Image (tube, rainbow, N blue to C red; front, side, top):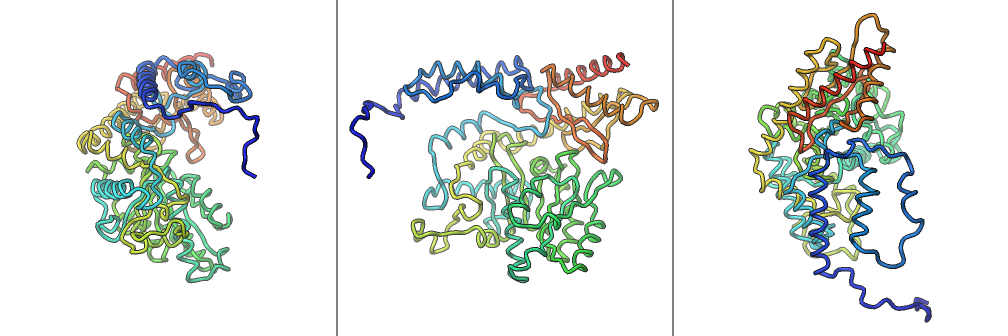
Length: 497
């Protein structure tokens, strides 16, 4: 058992880490990436391929013998790139941005090169300690209370996405409640969000065992700019308490995905605190803007919440994946997610003198993500990061002005940060259903041409176009060109009526 058959040929001189070959191919790859960035505007922003295209261009089985590196790179150019939607294009205005920088790229090179698997402090002291430091750095930039920092009683961790942050804090709130009402009453636990809260909350509830009927999706209104009303939250919680249920978790949002609505953090926390509800603030996109003093007020009241997450990969130039979570009481998370099998036991952990990040997340293995954030902070400094955010906001303001200058269009909700929600309205003689069809057709035509890409949403029953400024390479002339294309496409649509 475990022996090799005698007829298997031995492949000699196999060296998967030939250092000189690695040096040569790494230079080639960097050149390829730089050329890709230089030429990115020559590609359609939204991929034009059909589903299943790549299977028709690749063999059914992996090669048995090595292929030249140049051949592989050629296939990246000819097979992979045509199937890419180019998130780094300066004409990408869809979803929220995924920002990049040369500093973060170099940090990522080191992260991958070191291949650190920092599940606990002993496995990689530098990985653990640098993460703790940069999390405190960013907390100070956001002017968070010291209760969220390692320098006090709290602390932070870098996850892959905010989805992980919501799941980890949700299970912590769940177990905190069950300690009081017992495990058999899990069916009584209730979670709260709004109809604008990211759908990841519902997914997290499924994983955490919260019954679907106990997930409250509280309606928002245009009058409140689609922010969650503290009055409606209180009414909903009081009804649940009256029904014998146990409220445990509220997900408030600073910068909702549809419209960038900002929930009133302080007011919601005041209500939730009165019922012992864990308050998590999801600021995945807009939270990064709060390093600028003029935007910091959007998280006023943060001292009364339990946890906060934001994703520097959206607006702080760090590449995917980098999502920061701060908690006031890390013990509530580590008590739920902590696990210390015999093969991982060590003196620093047993002395409780170190952070073991495996206990702050769902999995064990973790990458040295802090290097990217550290490189960005040190290479650019706070002033340049603030300038970067302000530049995107100014370009969004410019686009907003273009929309307002054309009477055929309207701004649907007030612009927040660097997202503009607008639509083609035409005139009162058109039925709402026809107006929606016009907007759908406008979006399809604009995107199918490949010159730009934006997305849509539905807010308060209204079909809306979303124009999100933020790709690292976007300049004012890209925004102007995008508006001209939208306007010209609208001209054609109206002319066809």
